[in-house]
Image 1: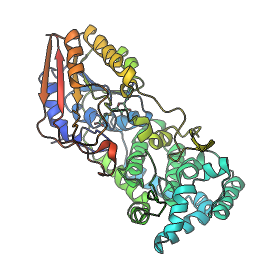
Image 2 (image 1 turned 90 degrees about the vertical axis):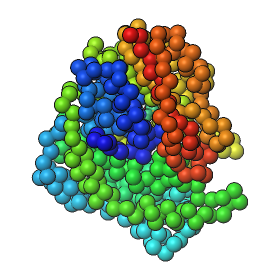
Image 3 (image 1 turned 60 degrees about the horizontal axis):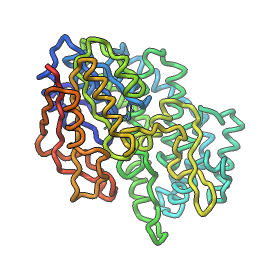
Image 4 (image 1 turned 120 degrees about the vertical axis):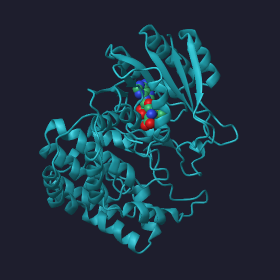
Length: 435
Ligand SMILES: C[S@@+](CC[C@H](N)C(=O)[O-])C[C@H]1O[C@@H](n2cnc3c(N)ncnc32)[C@H](O)[C@@H]1O
């Protein structure tokens, strides 16, 4: 096994295909050459390949760079450093105090199985949305109280970013406050060159506790059925996710990252568009592994909260029109989310074409992952077909091999998530070489 590590609950993660991918890259790349993981996502492929290669890891999302940095670089972090940080986090109480009215309301609602209040929290409990929209809710009193506390303590800034935006919605209020305190403690007490290590552990923690179906951030739990009745999921999920002790879990993740063996090669990470990355690759890179998105689901929507945790930048939020009125979208999405050409029908073909053009003209091998669409399942169709990709590959490469991983179950989400249900179709690699 070796060098297998799950960082995030990530759609389309190649965690279960790592040996297969590595084996095929090793057939066409020697140890002295470098490899690039062009759409690194959760970083598991970059990490796996770093055992034998100098890896360049790239992704458009900032959180991916943080995670890849934590996986690919060596950090000199002692148990003492960790204990000190955890002590600082545990002794910081002011933000908790500001949030007590909401923390208590939520914790009591879980204790007494109060579905009405839990639903109100999911539907109207974001302080930031309340601040912007001033909508009437049964939580009004507590929301105002917390807002007052925050402004009185000079906390209406990035110190309360995660709890203000997402507290009650994606995390319990207590957990969201915990995330803010961890972020502030990393910022104030950890040297810059070690921050990504601690931040990566926080991203993994957030991915584990998020209170959604599927452990992503595409939308909060839908509290009601089509008739408007409250679903029991509201309580069951709250009990399962919102009661997790975030500081304990964070500590756990820190030790998991700390225990990882690290590459002997010099690796690097790039945050940016795939074109920018391809144009900036070191000459030593011989093989590019590419695992772009293949459906119209933008990763930036599924993981926007991880991006905000990473950037800590108080983003503007998108709005939705409901019966002629503008409202902040339920998902509390960032306005500046990246729209990937690979997810857009009219752009995907050219995006692939450009990738083939640049890799082949640079005399590099390209290993492209593809998970076929099973029409019998209710998954979203692929934006490009395997046939289209193979035709394109053959324009730019002399040798194009299609290699199947055998029967492989895709990263399975809850079956009610109609768009990304499991596919039992085999994943394939399209291996393109010119020699
Ligand atoms: C299928 S996922 C990769 C999963 C990854 N192999 C893993 O195992 O975790 C696709 C990734 O492509 C990234 N992406 C989408 N469009 C991009 C672009 N134009 N440039 C760079 N990265 C992009 C997304 O952020 C996402 O992380």
